[in-house]
Image (cartoon, rainbow, N blue to C red; front, side, top):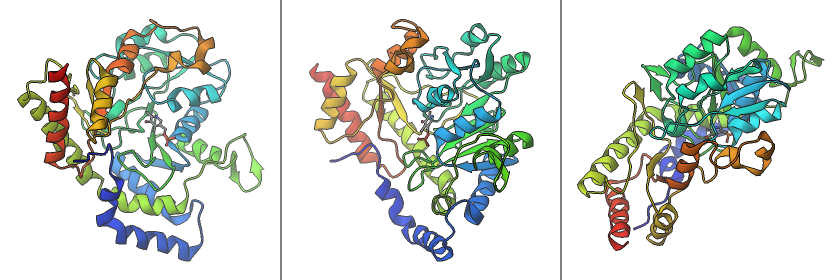
Length: 372
Ligand SMILES: *Cc1c(COP(=O)(O)O)cnc(C)c1O
């Protein structure tokens, strides 16, 4: 039995005709950059996330970059974030000449430890950038409190968390701005790159809209040095179709997560495998179902031999990356991030996964630990 990490073909098959019709409509118009499909998607995302403004951009990375730019982040500034995330979180800060300042994660949720945040905020801090990792919101209450006390904007990296909620409020609506990614493997994935900034702040939204077209509100009049980062109409057309199914797919992911939890318990593996922890006030959307194990790399190879796809998110925390040598961190700076990088493994969790496949995953993990 084969169990791939992700099966986008299985997701595509039942919606193929609908997607093709949407693509055809854009091709017939021959209007590819922004335009009506993007404006329509922006409205759909506004109502899904529960914000008054949404701005389509070229990627999740650019959503972070543009949200930070709109908050005035530049050289000499610091932005506080986590070292255990996809590179884009910190890379976007550095692209603006600002400096990422890392705080460690919590060992159970892999999200920012708010207890460490206060100590990382200094006179040069310009924003706080928590990540809702794997599809679960960071602990927003203390983060928002510290930000309010220091009068700092919170930019949410919600790239993995569309549809996740904290106290019944959606990811992307909790801080000053939220950053979504439509990379194909995200819960709402396009047929290429895409992203969106979400906010309730009209002035911030206007700045992002200006910055995504070379800092221009009026054609050929440039009031700031922006970038070329627009969502294209073909992506928006695909995403509008797929957004209609997002809740159904999310429920599928949640059902599969519950099933894994039960299967691991039944298999008596809880001494070997640490399951994902979900905070009571959160709705987890499982962009990834991540377990923590010892002998992670050997287990991963064993699963691969048995036809099971897995992934390591992320094998090296950002403070140990070559490009961040000059930040002055080293091994031991963020012990929980470093430990997670050694021990976590993402299992297949996509909505179309069937129970037999999940049973095969758990049995194979059982076999690995019985043999060792
Ligand atoms: C995917 C991702 C991004 C970047 O999104 P892209 O659309 O690939 O540019 C940023 N942060 C996190 C946590 C991500 O998972």
